Image (cartoon, rainbow, N blue to C red):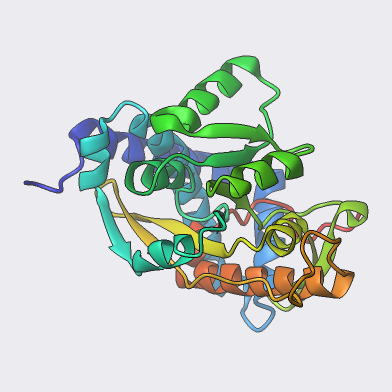
Length: 283
């Protein structure tokens, strides 16, 4: 059976790349943030050397958005034909502990693919997400993410829902790569720079005993995707610690490990990360 993406889906990706290129020309503020982020992450490189990455990242961003909505129109069988897998066995390894699994990802590749992949191959999961302010867009994105049996958990006050799902041996998904306020975050290295990062995945992993499974969906030519799974990251706590509040050092150490893996994943395909996000802005 052919693994070729439907013409309409491939066309949406091409249109998205064009839209991204136009946004690069017209989006001065995001273009400025992208260039600054790249210079901070790669101080040894010249602005001229980094410029192609900036341009390609905008093209990718446009394609990722349109392809995400295009995927919502495709059948489960068609989506599965567009996928290839790398180290997928790590998912079964993480689930074998019967403590649930925390799927950790980032704004890398086409992250919206992940909810479909996990639900189709391993079962439904709870996706941590912040609602969109635009009600129409929020309804569309919710329908896309809840397809195939998934459930959305509002990002605010998500901890209780995450623990409940993990108690039942379920799966929860959360992104780790965006800036958070210092009062809500822990500072760990990211591309060699101190970065305020959400402590929630580490806190939940330490309290529940659930392993964290880094998983990323890279965009491939022709409307296809490569699903890359990393080895599970296990919480290390003294026996009998149960759900007592984890120490700040425990949380920081695990969070640093998560960002280390995420950085390695981004370095694999630099132009597929959301460099236009103001990751290192001072609060």
